[in-house]
Amino acid sequence: MHRVTLQPSGLQFEVEDGETVLAAALRQGYVLPYGCRNGACGSCKGTVLSGELDYGVYQKKALPDEERARGKALFCQAKPLGDLTIEARTVGAAKDIEVKKLPCRVQKMERLADDVMVLSLKLPANERLQFLAGQYLEFLLKDGSRRSFSMANAPHDDELLQLHVRHVAGGQFTDHVFGKMKERDILRMEGPLGTFFLREDSEKPIVLVASGTGFAPIKAIIEHAFHKGIARPMTLYWGGRRPKDLYMDALANGWAARHAPQFKYVPVISEALPEDAWRGRTGFVHRAVMEDFPELSGYQVYACGVPIMVDSARRDFVQVCKLPETEFYADSFTTQADLAAPAQPAVVAPASSPR
Image (cartoon, rainbow, N blue to C red; front, side):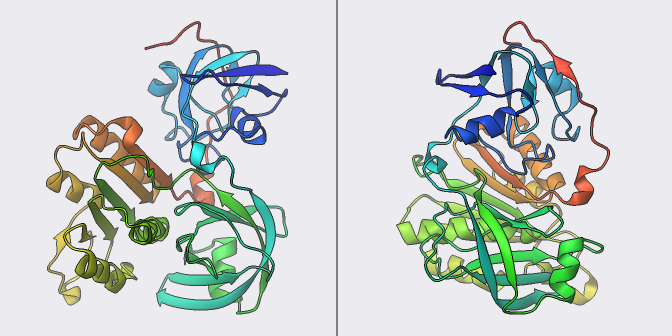
């Protein structure tokens, strides 16, 4: 048994031999930032101030060697080898929400693009899922594996849980969704999970950045903000390769029409073809943000989508646009392919804070 001390809060919890820091924290009611829980997204990254640990197995892009050398670790993978002191934020808003394992029924399937299916799920009649807008759930598959999908509906609109599923060619679960799944099928799920949600204790204006189906949790956050009457200015940037990839473009344009000037919508297309007749913004979606907001020091950013977009946005917004790193909130949509070629387990023993 090892003791972990969280700074700057001073909170402490116990970790069993072979248990990760994140798993132990969640088990004892301390919610640290996290996303994928498999060492691929980097959301759980924090600083080891003192102590020894096994880094576990992770993706190098989530924890580059230079960051590891500065004392960073991924707490979803890191296992203490003795008492630890770490620097990590606790997330109070998610602390009292119960994580449940529940059956659900596929109530409706709606194909909004060639590779995007909107699933509407119904829980048992006596069940409701309490969650924060932006969190995700995991399907528990028969072979013991799991698949994660963000909920696209806001908590006040919880009669059905809405998921946006992109077809990944050769993907076991998404092949099933687009090939054999039918309405009234029964699935088993666990949720809510994750720490990607709107921080309502801030008054800063908000920039939201989505690529592809990363729009799903962003949609939930925006609809929650509208429902709560949150008056902070919001600008949504939604990127796709071609206009058809923005599969709920009309919805986003409707928000902009009804909620101007508080809310603005900027669609960005990277690979438009002549037949698309696209006249809007082009290029990488996070670059469009940088063109419009060269100075982000007074903002909060919520980014969701493919890892390369999230990673690029985090790096460039912080380094170039002076966004405080603590004001960048992200959910990186990792796939099974993203878990290939992991780094080898390693041990580190920093004597004190590297900063």
